[in-house]
Length: 330
Image (cartoon, rainbow, N blue to C red):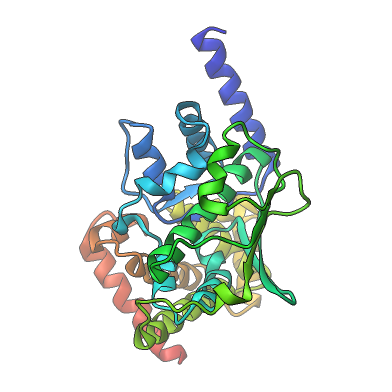
């Protein structure tokens, strides 16, 4: 196949993927580390990557290393770790770390849902990822290695799950699973699951810090509340604003109306009927994203750019307005 034919095929697959799946984003350093891994000349200091962009990056990385899902976390520096990974280190024991991950997984990615199920002799961790099968396999492998790496770092022990089940077929690099997951591994299962024994759940985390956990729970709970605070038309517009900002676009009432197949006048009236304006909604979504980016360690310049401001002065002026409004609402 020629280079031009290969590019056409890639473009077609990308269009099909974009059209058949809802627009979703992963927040954190994953996309940036993948870009760095494939030696792309366009490495950007972004913290959000769409599902389509991630799928393309994982595919390119897998062409260099088919087992990249198992290997990518070794390319993460501590600065690349997501706040959820850092938070797990401050938990009291393994069980608390797993519950922390499940509770806040949605803050890391729109695609992810981590479900914990108590069983008689173990705790079952189910990974639900709303994405195409190929991307799910890479992400599941990466999440397994990431979670076990963090637990090993936190406990100081060569930590292994009791058993593991995966929905994908057994890969050709199957032997590499054993270092991370032990010998009790099954493929072609109904779900992606890790099982942790009751004994292992009680292992203490050596960096436990109750004060830090209180701070993290307060901030992350606030972030969850803000992410879920809107309903009706305000909720739809908030989601559109969030996605526009994440993808580097400046949202306007007109663009959001077009996305929702409404006229600007009709959408403005619908928001007014819910006691909301587009300006206020934009401010609240920006304030929500600002808190998340600050928690991730982004600089003020990076935050201003992500929120759609061309200069810091405009950003600083706007954030004063958000915070004044927040204090008024309280």
